[in-house]
Image 1 (cartoon, rainbow, N blue to C red):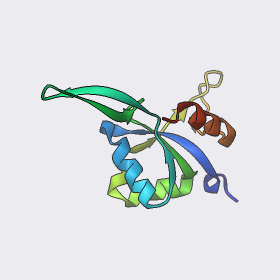
Image 2: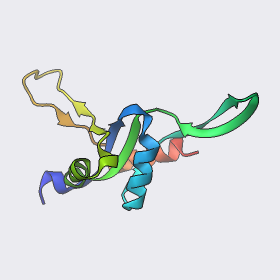
Image 3: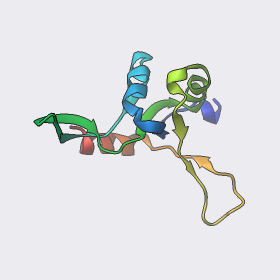
Image 4: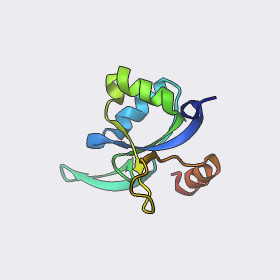
Length: 116
């Protein structure tokens, strides 16, 4: 199996605070996702409301293969705002950047620690 066909957790940037819209589309496609959320008090028209909002805007974790995510980004307009988070080595400046992934066990612990 090719490296890009392995199912992994990918932390991804989503431009213009569209992380919830992207999550809804991925949920419809039965792709596992996670957005850390928290409650925030918002005042609208003099009324206080307690809303569940993303704890870190523009961030979503997607559990899928790189090949599938890349295909979605190229064929589904809702997925266009998704961007891989890249890592560049500090030791070897000439090495190519790599796509950041999160091991399953670490992601499971992160979800347990941040789930509302």
